[in-house]
Picture 1 (cartoon, one colour):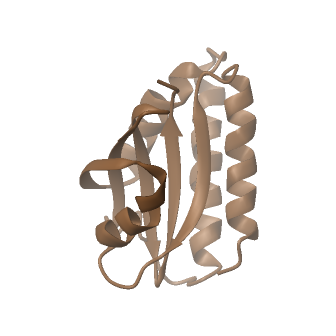
Picture 2 (picture 1 turned 120 degrees about the vertical axis):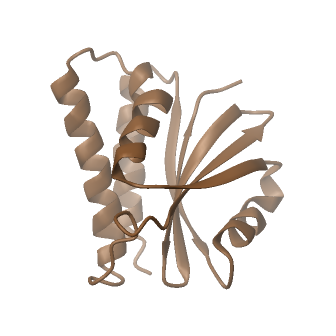
Picture 3 (picture 1 turned 60 degrees about the vertical axis):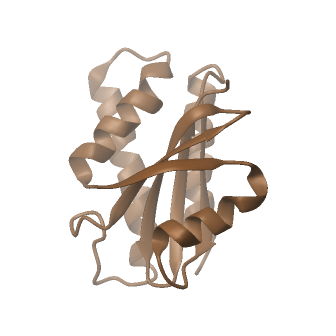
Length: 146
């Protein structure tokens, strides 16, 4: 998997973090999938002392809700139209990432995207949006610091 699109998404998320005055942490990363998405994601995080609490499948609407709750509420921007553009941009970066691997898929529309609730000493309770793409997973973390 070409990591450049993920690096672009990660950089965009870092810029949004700065707009929050560093009140939230936002990042993107890649992991390997060899079987079950949830099990492979647990394995990917195993050396970080992160507890994954539960998983649920989400689509576009829920992604917007998660972004609003876990990141946009921390931004120092009150203009709703700009916040909607941020959400649109993030989804565009996600789509660009998986379409470079397989242009014919849409895991978001196909309800394959997983919301993973997590907990760690560093971040407290937070979430990951996990997008499976063939044998890779794109994980986007949305957190505040405990």
